[in-house]
Image (cartoon, rainbow, N blue to C red; front, side, top):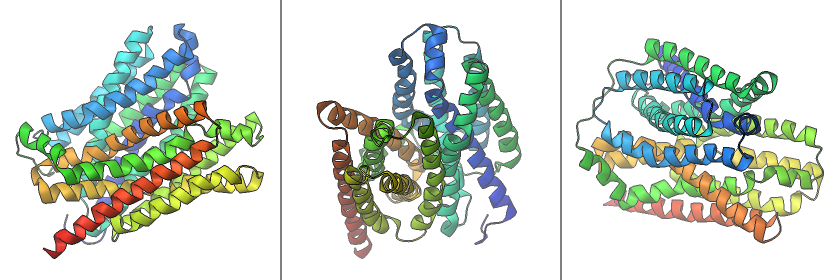
Length: 395
């Protein structure tokens, strides 16, 4: 695929990978909407049911780079198709899970499969497109997660309300079958084959430039989730009716679709240079919530801007990690592709934790100041990395 213009084949592949991330995202995020149904059905507390989410994120973050390194020499097409089949099997088993411990193990195994499939989708999208169209492809693939939150999760939650939480996993299983069929037809057979040792793969993680690039999206997502984790209490503080909060959250997810589109445009040229300023704008938007939430309309506009800024970093940092790997460890680009999704989970966990700490120690809206500081830290780290890139180019 050497054409400098996206062909129908390119677009079909992009849509196939976007469908895959939509399915994976729905499976990962829908647990939030059916949490109380699970706790009631399995006779556990909501807090215990919540560990299904934290265990998923932790397993995802730890296992994904390890499995990517260990399986780097596997044929990509066969490996992707095999993992989708495993994904279908795990979700179908969740339908019949009758105890918390069984469901927890199944969700942790699903997290491993999810992390590796997402990483492979990014690798395929990157290497199958013309160089100047990689940003467009990656932004679409990441858009699958946004669509999962906007469409997949509400449908899954509605099924749980109408029938049971088991029906939600019937939905994700069915989605998995559709993803398998489209992937079988559209994923090319001539994908590149990596030949390197496991030790060679893991050596990438010790590279200072890679580590620096890893913490850029971790801090970026951390800034957003410091506030987003506690967005519902903020909305209640604005005296928004409980019934209207779901509408606001839907609007938040819908606006983030445009964030994905803008992410592709930012990545098209001088991405890391632009991200320095994106994070500063994000800091202003997050901090402004401290005052704007005193006013109903201004507060909603500010929250909309927060959503618009939320995933602007994804495409740029995904490509940046792969590009750095091509410079410092060309044989480990597959592992590098797994680091952005891992970083996002680290950032979500970090942001939620620091937001919770501030929330319980002081006034709720003080989390906006902390979020702004984290965003500034992301900007500083991006600026340092950008400066090092410029120095390398002049050598």
